[in-house]
Length: 341
Ligand SMILES: C[S@@+](CC[C@H](N)C(=O)[O-])C[C@H]1O[C@@H](n2cnc3c(N)ncnc32)[C@H](O)[C@@H]1O
Image 1 (cartoon, rainbow, N blue to C red):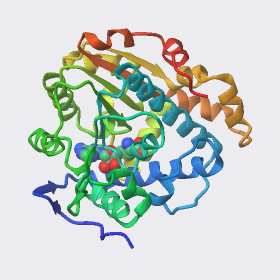
Image 2 (cartoon, rainbow, N blue to C red):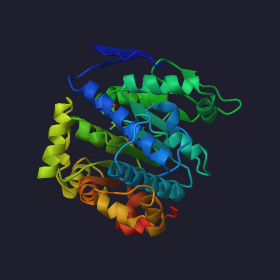
Image 3 (cartoon, rainbow, N blue to C red):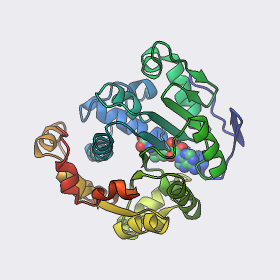
Image 4 (cartoon, rainbow, N blue to C red):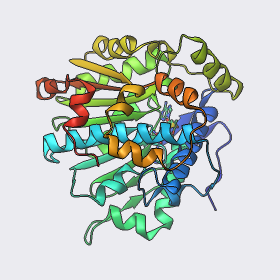
């Protein structure tokens, strides 16, 4: 059984009170969609994830182009993380904004990569469900505490020795600051922020405030943002309408008009630089062996639809401070510098 949905006006836990905005329920529901899609693609063999099945029971099969889209998304983000971890030799922290049920922390624990601190933030409604699942599954808990470490739990927050999952509205910067301090964040340590389909749901001004705040607080950071782009054409319009019908407006869509608006937002918010690639470029830069492997998994009837999907999503890498200037490279250089097979 899962904890009851708040379904109402507030969700409370660990001194956090989240006042719902009208669209928040629909935004929160996007996590279920993303998690279902990841689970489906994993089950079909697109990538390995031993943990997503704990968070998602749904076995619904998705269309091949959706599975390929998720493959490119997860690979793209993972490749940036891997590059960052190699560059910092693990002397760094990861902060996953709007983490949903993402399993990166657990997957990394099964690799040679270690990080000093891994922090995940999402609405309390989402983190409550994630905490509940972790608490109930020894395989997940075992990844969080070592022999002498302890895990502290509240309904919405979970603290392990180097893993922290906390409920917070990312539009409330005092609360974000407070939560990060509870997670013993180190503002001087190189930090990689991840936002996978998250910023687009945050009102433009709130998003700018968040990005500016991070740029002021952290000395050396990289931000990996995956979300919509080219939203001012016909395909984008249809996507927006479909989401509106489900009660979910893309409040931050004004930064998703082009690769340039994506980059510009970071630069205007005090970031040293930013690079954006559409997912056609990202997908093509994945090694041909890996692409051939996943292209054999399912027949694709709608090649044109996949192309359009790829043209309407992007990966943005922004950086702060001189330490990461060398991230201003082409996507081919970024991908080829990694061994992703
Ligand atoms: C499409 S889901 C993606 C989840 C996860 N990043 C992934 O890719 O699997 C978007 C997530 O962003 C979270 N989110 C959006 N706006 C937020 C806000 N203002 N504060 C906290 N979380 C937010 C939602 O609750 C949801 O879990």
